[in-house]
Figure (cartoon, rainbow, N blue to C red):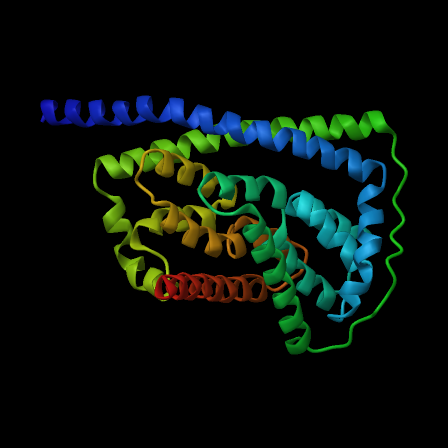
Length: 313
């Protein structure tokens, strides 16, 4: 019994020792990407440049029944996280119906720069991932605009920014970035350790067994199941961190990673991010199901595209 316990402890220790270097390397890579992008967005937002960009694209939003000021919310989401999106929506006083549609769009298209870079690292084409996410967000908006009851209040993009001193704003950014840095370092390492332990003791196949039929329905390879679970619970960035590790170790092919990327580009972080919107009054089901259905559609479209290419060669 003691020998068995010692063997288990040795295997657990091995998992930790082999995971930490890879986890630290991946976390540093994420931070090198996240911090400069976050600081650039802070400057763009502070000096009102995001609002100018939003004003340029406001007419497009009116075509799908959204107000001009909706463009401010979506443009903000392209560069930031859901917390920032909710702050802008609250400031604008976005209505329930329009807010629900915008919430779904932002859940699909937030943090484009950082998350697209992660997907590029795992084998997908950056422009394709950006196009997939933006097109999916507008398809979702178009569909919800037809289905949700009520009239839209078509207003102009007239968001007036509250003047803030640079120093307090900079201090807030530093505080937020410090918290984000700690979160990335801790979570990436913990996830990689968990993955190693599950692999070491052969537990992943048992955890994923009930999900195999669902993965087939979604058009995803069985070996992407664990990554799919992580991306849908903790988010694309953390799921991507494990994908990078799996790809570098040769456990995940470029083709399988690309199919998974098409899914999680549209449907990821199905817990924390929707709950943030639920907390301010938006319906959970509408925040989740349109993204799942669109993600399935985009994967099968990708599979059809690949099949046609093979037939032509």
